[in-house]
Amino acid sequence: MARAANRIEDVLVLTEHFPIYTLGRTTRPEHVGAGWEGKSINGIALCISDRGGSVTYHGPGQIVGYPILALRQYCAGPKAYIHLLEEALIRSLAILGIKSARRPGTPGVWVKDHKIGAVGVRISRGVTRHGFALNVV
Image 1: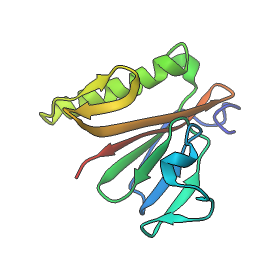
Image 2: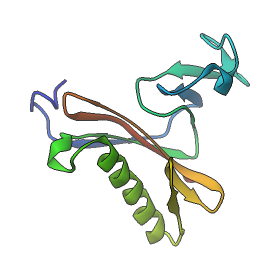
Image 3: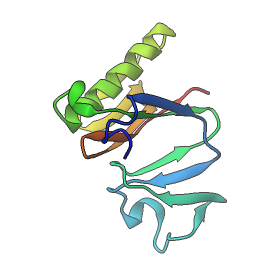
């Protein structure tokens, strides 16, 4: 990994994906149905991911951010990092006049009863991978 070897600086990659469901490490068969390997949901492909979390949809109308960071420079560990990502989303939404908040025990950012931001990360050799998905439409 270039970041772990200090060959690149920290970077944030932002993108908007074609429709896909990613399945994080806590995904269970009942989340997507039995025999889901190589299948799709309503014609949308399923992709296994090594990030934390369960099933997440990515597609048009959503900004997906992939921070590639040397984590120790910013916080103590995974829980603190997830908190920082959520806080960044909450503050960004506040700038746009959207009041959002965390929900205890549930990662992500919520506007009332609707999840507007998902967080799923992986940390390898002290470097972050994956990140957040923010629904903008």
